[in-house]
Image (cartoon, rainbow, N blue to C red; front, side):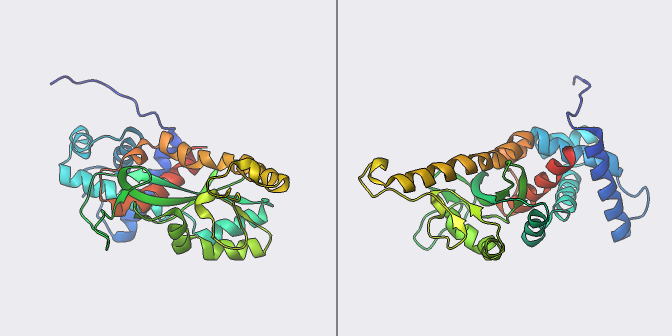
Length: 269
């Protein structure tokens, strides 16, 4: 066995933030002092290594000197403690109003996972996305006009279309926000979402974009150009917190994992 030193490329204040949350959680549930194999700081390092490095839990637990079962328990605890800090959609939209934002941007992404059992009524795999040709979970993102991630929904199986997932988790609140002067921009996957959700007009089937009138083409270009910044919300989270590129835990945990990454992303800055 070869022993070597390594550095975790996360700002120290992020580790300290998570360690404080974990320490508060231990006090809340009545954990006796020095009864854990790892203190809050070392547990925070384990959790953040998993988020940053996509490392296997077995390796992380071995490096921390704990069993694999304990490693998983510490990891899930850290994910839940972070996810609990995420604001709900109504709180996010209220903040957008207070800050005078002109619009928000809605987008969906597939967070890939290992293949899992589950069959739809039509016989297809529940967690398989035909669009992406991969297994995973559908998560909806809301971002600010500059592309800053603001909110992440709970997960739906990968076979769920973006519009269906948005109807479950986002559209009711977005309708009210639009009525109060905060519209939502989205791509063509959300056509039919309803009033206040601004999407490009789809060209007639078999026709070119030029068949649309000039006003419609201009509107489409404006919506695409303005909402393009929203594309970076999911990309930013996936690149900074690499575990979102492929989740090896149960896909039902993807929502909490994405919300935890969102909280960490806000603390990073």
